[in-house]
Length: 295
Image 1: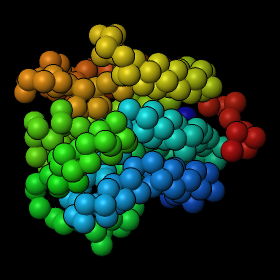
Image 2 (image 1 turned 45 degrees about the vertical axis):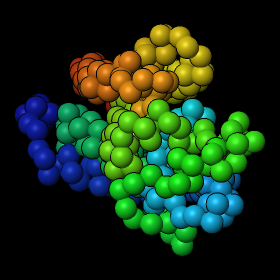
Image 3 (image 1 turned 30 degrees about the vertical axis):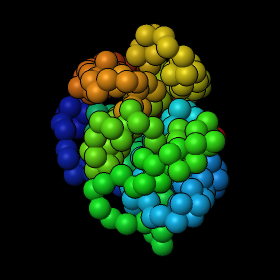
């Protein structure tokens, strides 16, 4: 392999690698899992909001379903876990991988894989968002204010204060920010969460322990999500708590008991460290052992 080709960074080659992998990913039959996920999301979140809107004869804000989805303690476990399933063979290797490596070089191939991972995470979230919009479009409005369904449901139905609807978007969220602000924070934080998963999977591959990388990813998701349900400061050691916006706020007073900016710093540092280790480790990976059996 040409050593000069190995060292030179080419944005064109990075883009080409990312695009090829992205198209293969979109065409993978495994993506049926994505539609199963959205059926579950509809039943667990969207249908509840629509039923509440019908009971109150009100409309919901168009972004509220997605905000509810990405701030649910259950969904913050299901969404990243499903992403691992969809990306389980990331980075995908087969008999043609050596050809890509020879043409692009290890570094460009790896950076292309990183870009593909980001494209996949973005598409994954966009897909969930789009479906949530379509499902409520006939019963929603587009204005940067919380709906009465979110803010007045328990006042209208005091006997349902312990039902699922008040928990989907609670006062720690709608009392501290507008829907657009909540949408921006939740979307960027969960995207960073998925980015961590992507880099973790790449690290497992670069160390020759692909399965271990997946198992660590599932463990982090499971433990982190479980800790979100209890008042334990250890939850801030895991990505799950950082990606749920309302957890950053006090239950009564309007202040951040854990600053959201620290969550962005947490994700940035974690992604940087994992990426650097992966980038260095890929130099020692033996691509010659890759065969069509890995497809």
